[in-house]
Amino acid sequence: MAKPITRFVRQLANKLGYDLLRLQKIHIYDEALSGLGRGGGFDAFEATVPRDIKSVDIFLRSCAGIEVHGQERGRFNGAPKSEVLFRCLRSLVSSINHAIIRGVEVPLSLVVIDDHSSPTVVQKIEKILETGNFPTRLHPLKVQGMSSSLTETFELARRDSEDVIYLLEDDYLHDLRSIYETVESYAQLSACVGEDVILFPSDYPETYKHVRPSHVLLGSHRHWRRIYHTTGTQVLSRSILEAHWENYKALTAYGSDPEITEENTINRVLKTVSCYAPLPALAVHFQHFDTISPYVDWQAWWDQAGRE
Image (tube, rainbow, N blue to C red; front, side, top):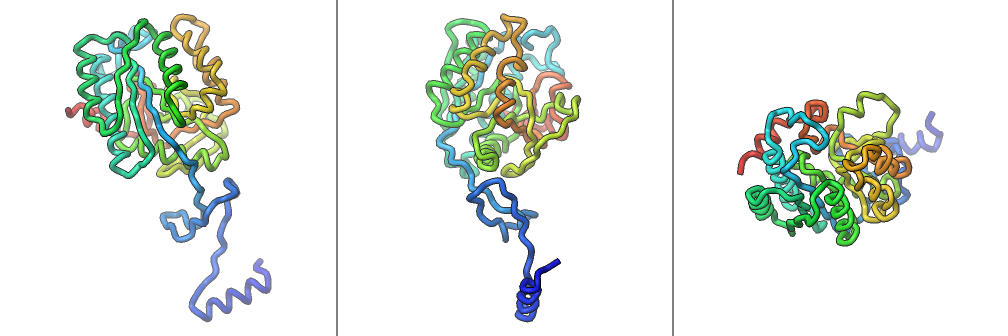
């Protein structure tokens, strides 16, 4: 029930041709600014002051010599690994270029850590990297194998990154808006939570096999749901990598030690660091039907990435 003074002010405002509306406040961030007048359903919310991002450095591990690590079956659409690599890389470069066109001022860079692909594949990787309107680099591995690839990637990210890091496997197909929304949402979600977060770009089907309560927050352009399991593909800050270095270092034994999984290494980080995935996905794990995210037009993404 409105208080007497509120009723009086509302009546006075009505006579002058105005009205008073109750503004619902969400106490997530102490320095939030009013979202009144923003439109699009946000008038009842307070805008969040985004976290400042100094840079986003992307580290992609590539290996065209193995179809699916640890499995005998191939990709669900029958495409060879080299073609999956090319299209996923092309979709990523296009997405980074799109983010720059959309006005993202955060410095973006891409390093491809290649695990002994053939000269023909390496040449095509370099050709795709040349289409990027941002700094790119091909980093060939000296020692072959997944353990070496993971170790080198984590070491490079720890040494060369200043702020936000995108650790990426070579079979994630990206939506054109993926990098743009990831950068914008990382800034917004970190500010909402009040500390750095981890993002996983895919809405993984595995999440729906075990129903559990979850937090759902507003990102820059879509909802993001808290999750508790990711693959080796993550967006995180350098400070998180440093603070949980032992967990990431432990993952480097994946493939050589059958006891090592994401669950007993990097997913332990998610018990104390909030991790969010987009609804719907911004990238799909282009491996099997049971890894493809729902409600995304992956076929259109695949076809677009096939156009050189």
